[in-house]
Image 1 (cartoon, one colour):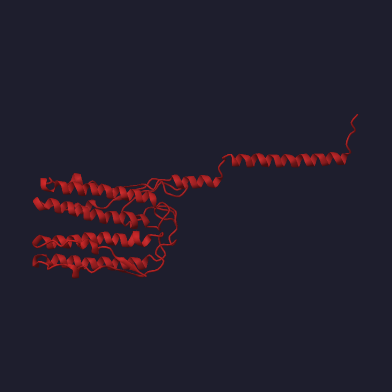
Image 2: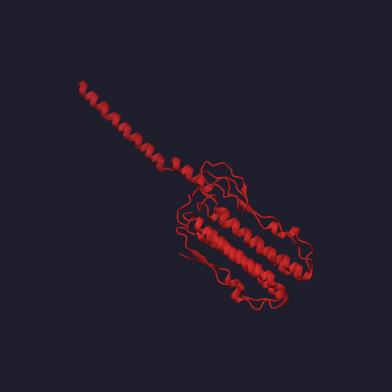
Length: 287
């Protein structure tokens, strides 16, 4: 016949049993977490990963062209295809740079350079048509593209509007235009000086009828360089690892390509069009 335990032994058994229950409950909870129950922070990370950076759209150029002479069709079609390639590359870069840059990263590193490329390409289209017909005017107004943003790239953010070059997209305080990266992480860590190859000294004899236009574009090259150096000084501490290349040197090169191309075309109208001047477009940063 079993004997009843003393009261103090009963209390000890109860305490031990309660502790075992607590340990068992903890193991069940831990097991559930390991089995795939997401932590709260995982939801935020997922929202950041899945948020759309938006889509860049550009005005259609082909529908705004006049009748294209047969002799110019191949060149015009090639440049129209190039406009599409430029847009695709910009949208790819938009997706690949989520998390980078300061407040105006998208404008400075993507939309701005895209506009400069389109200006040059559209100008070549107009020149091609003008060789055998009437050169269309006003096509430069089709160069600027817009960002049609979906949701912001930070968790819980509201949907953003669209932006055009020179206008920052709506964003939360302290976040980059393309994501939530804060300005000042890497990038432009010190001013330095941008220098560019001299174009004037590489030109052949300039016909008198082209001198005014050539001089005007040579002056524009100097203005572009001065603006780039001013921007370099004003953006110290901003951007990601490639900020200077993407937001200053790249756009400067695109502008110079277009300007140098106009110089060569001006000379070629009454003389021999100089070749190889595009190699003078790229500039360098000297710290």
